[in-house]
Image (cartoon, rainbow, N blue to C red; front, side):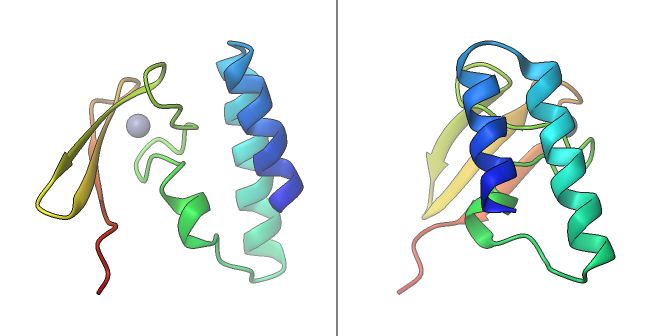
Length: 87
Ligand SMILES: [Zn+2]
């Protein structure tokens, strides 16, 4: 799972978003098959609606507000919110 996200990240960095999305899909399928949920840092890398890989500045826009990370998916225009200020 970690390895697949690493591959997705590398694909996204080199501009191959199609491949990054594929790696995410494989990771999700494996998670469902073996009943392993995505880790928190992995969840915030994936759009909750279209499941595309969120690469800041490329496939999503990231803003910080009130202790939340707000990402706007450029593929489906969905706003994903993640709490990062967990005290
Ligand atoms: Zn999306």
